[in-house]
Amino acid sequence: MLIVPNFGYGQNAPVVVELFSSQGCSSCPPADEYLVELAQKRDIIALGWHVDYWDYIGWKDEFGRPENAARQRSYAAAGGRRSVYTPQMVIAGEDSVVGTHPMDVADLIAKHSRSQKDVAMKAVRTGEKITIAATARRPAKYEVKFVSYANKRTSAIKRGENAGRTITYVNVVLDYKTVKKWDGRAPLSLAANAGKGPIVVLIQRAGHGPIEAAAALN
Image (cartoon, rainbow, N blue to C red):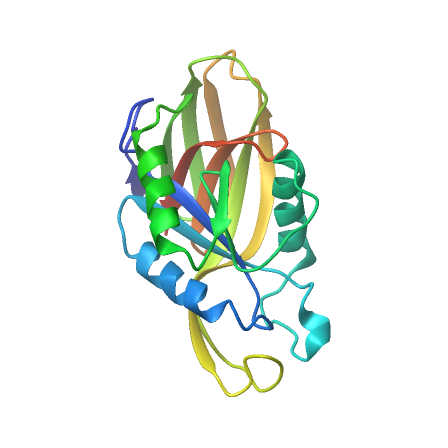
């Protein structure tokens, strides 16, 4: 059994950092390496979302998924942007920054670690079952999402802009889904099957808005 403590609505909740990357992007390896560093920090939940839209330039990303690119485009639309790029980091579902600008990333992480969230969550994992309890400070359209990921993957890239490089990736997103929609008016109580691998639980504002609560369950 694994229990994630209830952080309440205040500070010190983990900050979610999402990197949108591609094995076909020559600018991405430094950001991939930076994500490895971020993933070691206890107050950060780091996720690597590999996109597929650079596959045509010589190397098909082994982990690239159209669903990941769709999430990135949804973030862009929510922020009023028309285009996407790699490497991009999205901090707490709200702020966007180039993934090779660590000082800017650190500033945004610090900003969100100090901010008060609208949802308090406790998550418990027992085998393949996850039980979630949450309360909201105010009603809103929230979505509970499960993100499945691999802790570590190493790839030898044979063609494309990164040909000849062997790169180790962390927290590689394999799948994600919305398991519950919630209006926040009453406390949330949810039990769902999550499979055997590691999972990140997100409670996020609908429409790819801010992430209000998160927990990593191995």
